[in-house]
Length: 243
Image (cartoon, rainbow, N blue to C red; front, top):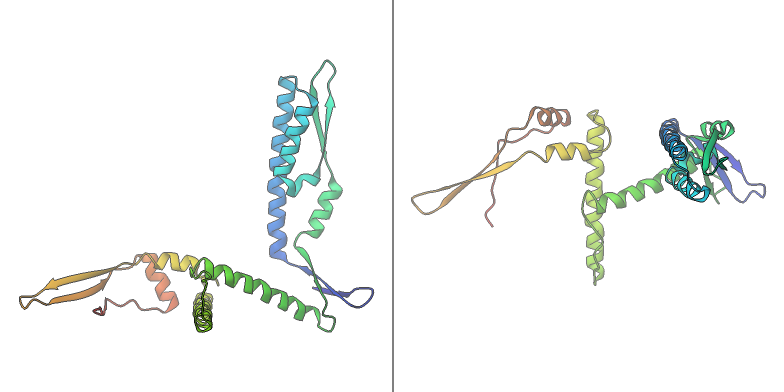
């Protein structure tokens, strides 16, 4: 991170560099470069095999670059008239664009009207905003707690409390996964453990009552390893509460 004040001193700009983000963006650029080069070669072969109007070729070229805009700036492409009719496609790579892309990969700029914080404080405040946005996505997705139109203040407060407690539980499970060496995203762990089944066995007696016993299915080897790493013992039986 690098902090820089605006010329008038009323704003702060923070240049951030992330190695993980740089690797991801580099992979994206390489993938789109391969797609464009393959599509251009196919378009050029099509032009050689069949006479086509320059306008038609230009429209096909526009669609190629539009679908792969992340690396479109790397290619300088021309549609030229061919002697005898038709059109040809010629292109070259702009190495200056590649150099700038490699230099800027993994970089992002933050802008703030706070001028008395250092770079790390501003960056952490930004990360907290992204975490808040992720919390909303978790509520609507993983926890399936979507906004509800309440008519009374106490119901609104109750809904907020339930959402808050659910998110705290989610973060606690995330920390458990992190301490167990399973990363800090419990989604995959939930998906695996959720496959463990519980079976209710009902046994009627001569007295007319029914004895119910809830048994837990044996976990698979992968599920058993996850439970052991998380320190969660799996009970053999569970109490069944009559409603």
